[in-house]
Length: 444
Image (cartoon, rainbow, N blue to C red):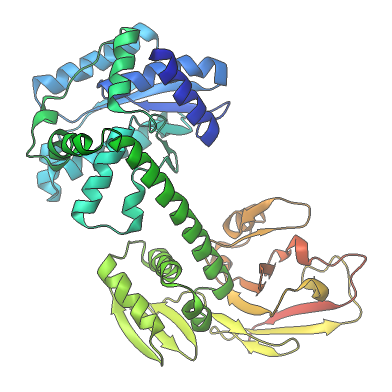
């Protein structure tokens, strides 16, 4: 079993590219069977794959002497193997009481906060947690019971920012079998037997019964979550495309999108504006508001949505606005909400180095004018594709000017951005016949 498990993880990590040569990976090491197996497997693979590892352990101080023993075990485990370790203690019970959180929620929050701090202090590129296929099944069932949309059916993500889950293809039986065959000791959390905790009840009572109905239940879970992840990734890309084309404000384009895409786009707009997630009830209400004909205004948690003259705007008490979308024919003067005038005109004589010109023959469909939105990206001539945020930083565009940057789009996406110039596909070349010039002036 040991070699089979090792090969399964090797193939998974390589296939997903969650760990690459040169990476420094922080191992979230609780001392349990899964995390011990992960530590041993990644230490084994690190040499051949060219990455390095270190470890972090948080003592939650919830189980008295048992918690202290787990910390001591992890310290010894790392010391014997020459594995660099950062360890901290956190009185989660006291923290939960002070913050009025549940113990499980507070412990999870404290743990991830610690892991990210440890990663920064130890210069780690990735944080590996030992979630398995068995954990994925528990999460899926938990989400179904709690009441979840399709995102909840995706289970545990393979990666999320710095976080990676290299054991997500392994069952708990496989990690424990690996430990036995490799002669690896591990600790057992006594609270894992307490079925008063929802996840423990799912693990101890629900999954065994489902496995009786279908011995390949965990494999079925993997197929389901993989399929839903693929579908969700496609819908998220479509939502990105909708936001890029609509600027997040053109009601006609927003209404033409299917509900699954529209809801994801609206959720993103809300999140970008407020920094918070919108619950299902309010998201459905937001979607119904957008689809309804006519002008109007509705209140969302921490924001107002306003429909006027074919555009959607999010505002708060300070009247902060999301980017708007404007349509115009060439050679028309357009007035932006802040009073600036944007003029698009065809010119005969031009300087090839002018950043305010584009090749008219490369425009696909109609041109649209808007302000930038957070997910915008563009490829500049002879340069890679980057988000506008990264381009603005690289070009040292004043911070106060970035959210006001004017973006010109066609049916394929961005063709020109204020301060940056033309996208590669719309750049003027020696073969250009028709040239459009974009001029932006502030109203006196």
